[in-house]
Image (cartoon, rainbow, N blue to C red; front, side, top):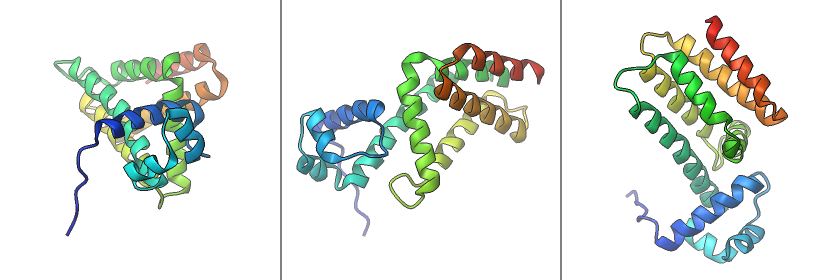
Length: 185
């Protein structure tokens, strides 16, 4: 018989937010419970109790990061009474993705995305696929007249530009490349 997890306690939610803030600056690749617990004012034992395991904590952190992305998608969709079109939505997404204050979140996303590709059975499982589906759904609702191939190409271009931006910090060049791609299509 399947069990359902109760709603998180206030303490669990508080520690998750602190752990999420920590992971945005320290990453998840070499996450160790002891330094994390110390940094967020807890103990490894409490984290294990609340999240079940280190993998459970990682899954909760990934879900928390994904919630930020899903909120962006929800807010973007709500700004329009009618589908705005692929070029408009791609420019909005790029502005959001490329904002300096989102670099930690985007670095977190890249790390989680990559880990889900190389460790598909662990806590990262299905993260990459889920984010692709989420973003393609937004692009579809924003530009239903476009083909799936065109929406996929725009998504790939945005993600490639994001990787380049994160690697180089060159916002001007990557933004020019995004704009060039969007105006030539």
